[in-house]
Amino acid sequence: MSGEIALDTSLAVRFLNGDPEVVSRVLALPEIFLSAIVAGELLFGAENSTLALKNLPRYLEFIEACVVVPIERKTAVVYAQTRLALKRKGRPIPSRKDKWRREAPPLIFWIKQNKSRE
Image (cartoon, rainbow, N blue to C red; front, side, top):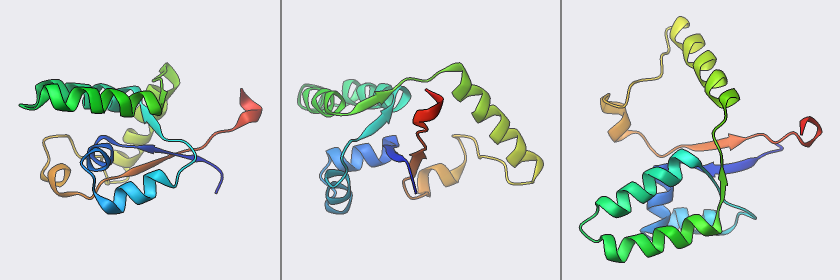
């Protein structure tokens, strides 16, 4: 499969906390991608932490080492279309308040890069 890996917030936090399984997989990647939203969630979490002075520098260093992918209008359109299609099929994306969000395993998002469209 042609593409790159972008970490979601849960995987990024597991990496930063030293989860051996996540660390080994992430360090094997040629590049680490984060969405701008994930970078923001990480910084919020670091600032909101009781260990903000310890966490913020680590998180900033991690984000600096990653490729932060901006969110564009096209991303919002594709998300809305995908969410609506899933809802119409009876498989809606649960809201953040849903229980699955707290219990689901972390997700890895594949970003397919098509150089010919750039």
